[in-house]
Image 1 (cartoon, rainbow, N blue to C red):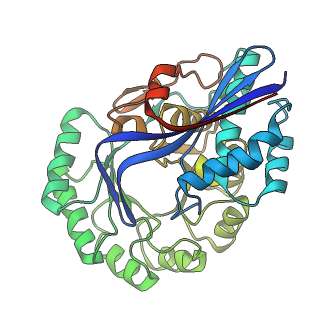
Image 2 (cartoon, rainbow, N blue to C red; image 1 turned 90 degrees about the vertical axis):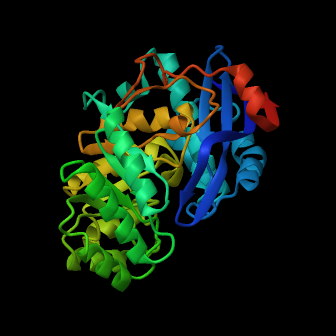
Image 3 (cartoon, helix red, strand yellow; image 1 turned 60 degrees about the horizontal axis):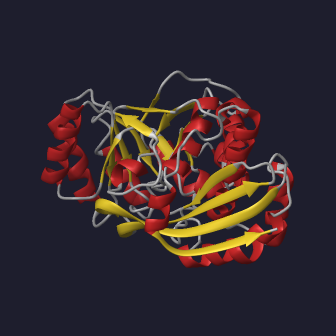
Length: 371
């Protein structure tokens, strides 16, 4: 089996409402959808959601990297040769993990379809029975977040994820405590600062005010790359710490383990170049006695399903939050959500049916290469 054609779609997914986090506000979500075809008639889908603030990739630049470098290089290759495919991409250009993830995910979709198996059966099998996800709340005034949290509980969500980190840390503490008061003491609350508290001193002072609020964890309170600072925050506070933006590669993971900088790590396919490396990183974390989450860069059904396949295959991945499709007013796939659970179809590959008409409708730029 050989890859004979690649079609790249630059799309903008419309959001139900703006997505607000510490470092950006998104009116829509730019993404790249990759379609790979093989000489035996199979079609595989991949996705890249570049983030200039985290992975160092920009939407239009990632399109050109795929067009000029990665896709011409993999035409004619067997998608099962995934190690060689990653090696070839790495030799052509360092980093650019989201662009590489698009190729990786499409190859796994093809592998699963060729084998007649869902992707999780290719990387470990079904290690968990249920996949759930939280209700994610963007940064707003404390009373608004509290009201939305109450509605989420009424709708049947089993956990909440609060985006904070914009403005003063004390304002975030007020937001978090307002939500806790609104939903009661037992509702699991995850807090994602997205690097917004800047320094370890600010983070420690904020977290100490939350130690009695039964917070599941505080995610990436300080700037990415400061793993020593993250270790300091963890050593001085009693709330579990999750590493997110600081974890982009296996080297980062090994340093986090060495410095005991986090209780939990958030693995994202867009940060680590896809399924291949995500599964390896989860296994490495397991060897260190560390739990994992598969997180989201707000992908469509394609990228979200890929993340859920990894989560399904690893026993130490205990949480997921791939909720992109729920945030879009228009989508291209059919990944099934029924809160608080998401359901993989069990069909070969990613198990997602992509609507080609909808894909073309949302496409703002397209490029194709064929051999």
